Length: 375
Ligand SMILES: *Cc1c(COP(=O)(O)O)cnc(C)c1O
Image (cartoon, rainbow, N blue to C red; front, side, top):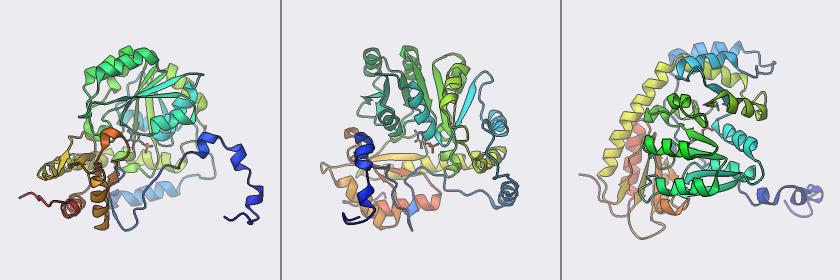
């Protein structure tokens, strides 16, 4: 907009909006038009046709003229039955787990409160800390993306963080830290520890049952990675003491009726989602082996529905060039090479259907500088 525009004369945003917000950039989501989408850990498989008609009639019967029931009791009951949430644990639902991450920060943002995690990891933890003015502490992982337990425990002692996040398995590395390390962190933590199990369907490991053991533990999950990314539903289980407080900062109608209905239907037919997750777990092993055959890269073991890999060589832009080369051939993955020093020359690909994985491998093979293609 130019200065002479009638709109700009009344623009006071510069003097009103927080300086730190004005300095931010909005969360970047790449344009995927016409590309094979392997960037955001979406499940590539649609709902089977036989279920769609039934879902459509349920959605059509919704009373969208009414506000959603704030506690979403019907959905909760289905979730409790489907997702092995311990009886004694309470549950809070969010508009994606992204919203829950913000609610935790909002509720814990006392003056000088700190939020600690191990880095590189999911960026929303740090984002929430900045937005709600908690001091952020990121403890670097080891070079091989394993957890530096000694440094993490030392940092907990020094900073006494109100909130600790551990992504289990971690995004973007795929690492599943040893359970004993996480338990040591929970025991050492003076405040809340959120174990983020966004990739639980692909890791088949969980801390849900430990909720009974550790009163300062919360387990957060999402239905996004298992097939409902568009519906936006996240949930967190913890003791009534924690959840009762978080409920106070939750917008009452945050999970809309369409989402409640869709998620409930999907969970009632959870065998379909489970089968899709199983297919993706097997595809992950196939893709991992295929990528190991390339001499020009290192692929890291992953417990998620994605693989992190590093393009070898001293050139700092090598991975970005490979990323662009892959995109030019119609496949969108994620370039993380400038996201964190430990991720130098690293790219991340979502595990998809065998056809899409094959498209990716072809594009990768063609995009690599020295074509040391597998025999
Ligand atoms: C994708 C992801 C989420 C976000 O989940 P939504 O429910 O889609 O907001 C949370 N945590 C981790 C570690 C993720 O990778």
